[in-house]
Amino acid sequence: MSHKIMIGVPTADLETSLMVRFDELSGCEIVSVHRAYAELSETLRSIPDLDVLILHEDLGPLPAVELIRDVTRNHPQLAVLLMVDEPDPEVFSRAMEAGARGVLPHDSTIGDLDTRVTQAAEWSQTLRRHFEEASANVPASGRRGTILTFTGAKGGIGTTTLVVQLARAAAQAGRSICLVDLDLQKGDIPGYLDLNHRRSIVDLVQAADSISASMLSETLYVHPEGMHILLAPREGERGEEVTELAARQILASLSSRYELVIVDCGSHMNEATAMACELAHTSVVTVTPDLPALRAAQRLIAMWERLQVREKKNVQTLLTRHSKKNEIQPDFARKLLGVSMLQNPIPSIFRSLEEASNTGDPRRITDENLLKPYSKVAGELGVLAPPPEPDLVQFPPQAPGADPALPALPPKKQKKGLFGRGDKAAAPKKEKKGKGKKKASSDKGAQFIEFAAVTPLLLLAALAVWQVLLFGITSMYAGHAANEAARQAAVTPNDLGKITGEAAKRVSAPWDSTDTFHVDIEHRPDGSSYAKATLAMPVVLPSATSPWDVTGQARIIYEK
Image (cartoon, rainbow, N blue to C red; front, top):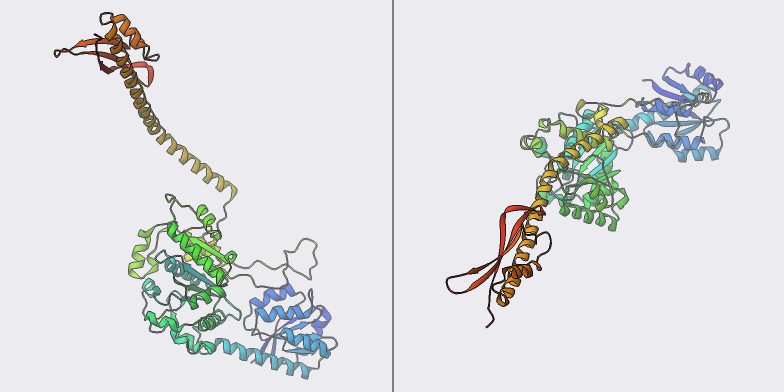
């Protein structure tokens, strides 16, 4: 069996010297030679079964110790040999502390080179076998994966539906994904995926400090769509067996084997969910646009901060059941919570979820108005594409005339988006300027139409209120005029002109016009007399009269 070797040296002379000696070793295969660390680092990602990396101390641009530390952190299964011009104890000590497997003089004989490379390759192959032992169903990525946790501000707001859809999206994008149900008392992922599996997270608790791939293979459920699922126990009371320490060890083991670990924490906090949120790279709290849910999210985030589980600035929120008809919109919810909120809320379309929820088949969700928001959330959270390698050396794109010894990193090929629709659906919300203007003008047009439809109703309501006010004023003037006419009639009962004149003094213009105001004296059969003041009822304007009159009357008490 040949050993796969990669070489990083700064000069052509060193490359030639090494290649001549390796040509004499039948058990070694040189896969590539690089003179720049940027190129070397990029190539490492594409050769997962590489055995040995020979790195010269002058490769640069950083000190060799820093480059070794960078490689061993991102590729712990790879054996690194540091090539030096003059080996000394200090160089050896610093190289070993950084993670190298040995120090190799540049003028090593063919025998020494064969011995050092063979020992390093055997160590690398043994370590890789430990990563991949027992079952091909449990992948080993060779680096720590990303942990995402999702916690509901309260129950029944779509958290489990969300994590199931994100896990499906990651699996279809080709990522190794493990979905963990940490809602230990009421975990309902089996209901959403129509699965029946007798193993759960409780079966890993006793051996949490030494979980092997064979244990995971027996415990995890492998879904036909490619995602691996670690279920909550069927008996809710057994959830207490998952302690803080066990949760830490189990999640650490999963993150060492999967690119992505998505954890459904439910809506109840315990030791296990608190530990998951503390370990998570991203922690999301789902919330609905109502004050009880927003207050619950505030209390949860504040409790995390008090217990030092997670700082408020490191928490993200996601609005579910969103509708433009809701009183609480995303901007207001964001201000109320005081934490960052994902840009793409999940709309309130329960009918599109009903069939999938009742049948346990998430593929039954076919409404694009629901699938697109899920896709955009997946893009925002980086579910579809792995995060960039945390290299210590970040190289910008190469500019014209730049040193060819430091080539620019080639763009990384993106994987397919959510449910096979490509990256356009998966990318975070980013609209072109023209498209944004078109959308803004469309919204303004809709607002204008709505305003035009409501304006006549508002005018009619205002006219009705004004007409009632005019009626009240007319009734008041009629009553005052009748009282004044009755007093004057008691003094001058036979002088109707003077009675009318005195009554008119109690009426303001234009109600006192002779066309709209007159006074009569009515003598009734019982011997009583009444003064009646009649005013024409105005319409809209006081000077515009109507066929209707308003009459006020007062009894005349004659002086004796």
